[in-house]
Image (tube, rainbow over all chains, first blue to last red; front, side, top):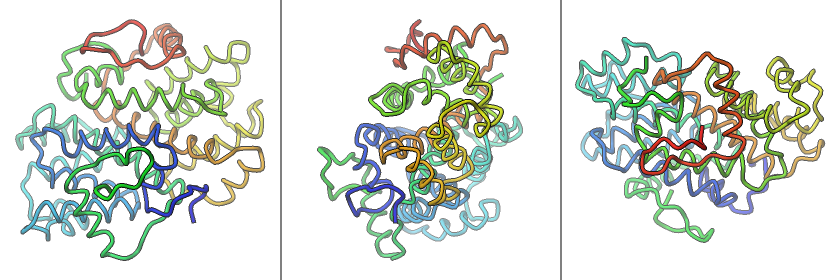
Length: 187
Length: 187
C-alpha cells in the first residue's frame, strides 16, 4: 500500500503524476524527450538503458515496464533484454551499446564514479557528445524515477501480462494524462 | 574538465542545460515548481533538503549552491545549514523538518529504504501527504541532478564567493535561460 493516499489505483509513476500533476507534467515531458526525441541512440536501446538502471536500483516497477517497452521495440531481438539485465558485458549487443550501459551503471552508483576511461571507451565505439550526455541524463533521470516510485511505495503489479500491455503503450510514447484523467495511451 | 565539449564555460547544471536546452527546460521547470511553487514546506527548508541530499551524494556543486540559497532564504538562521549538513538529528531545527530530512536521506540511499515508520514520524510531526510526496520527489530530483552534474564532470568552482552570488540569484527562482543565452538571474 502506498505511503500516502493517492486517491487512484493505477500503478507506479502514473499514480504519482495524477496525484501531483504540476510536477508530473514536467516528468513526462522530460522522459518523452529523452526516450522518444531525436537521438543517435535508438529507442529500444534507450529503453534498455532505463530498464538496466532501474534493475540496479532495485525498482521492479520501472525495470519491468521499461524492459517490456524495450522488448516491444526490439521485435525480433527481445532476448537481449534479459541478457543485459543479467550482465551487459556478455550480452549479444554491439560494443557501442555496452559502453553506454557501462556509463549508465557508473551513474547509477554516483556521478563521480564515471571516469575518463569510461568516456574514452564510448568514444572509441563511436559515441558523440550528445549520446554521452543523454546516456548520463537517462541514467540520472531513472535514478530519480526509481526513488520517486519506491520512496512512496506506489502500487507495483506482479502480473507479467500487465507489464507487456504497459510496454506496448509506452513504445508509442509518454503523453501526460491531461486534466487529471487516466488516458489509455500512456503508462 | 567536463567529459564532453559543452561549448560554454558556465558552471554546473547551467552548462548542461545550455548544451541541451530541450531537456534543460524541463529540468528547470521541475525544480522551479518543487523549490519555489506553493507548498507547506518553506523555501529555505526545501533548499536545505536539496543541499542535504547533494551532500550525501558527494556533489559539491549542488551542495554548495543550494546551501548558499538556503542561507540566503534563512536570513538570521544561517547557522542551521551547516548543522544539518553535519547531522540533521542534532541540528537546532523543528522535529517536522528533521523528519522530512530523515525521509530525504532514506530516498538518497534508495526508494525502498523509506519505511512506514519514517512516514509515521513525519505525520506525527505534522506532515501531510503533499509534504511527504514533495520531500520524496525533491530528494529523488537531486539524486538526478547530482548524477547529471558529476556524471559529466561539469565545471565546479571552488571560490566560496561565487556560490554566495549563485545562492542570491537562486533564492529569486529558477528561470530557464531562454534562447540558449546565459541570463543573469539564474543559477
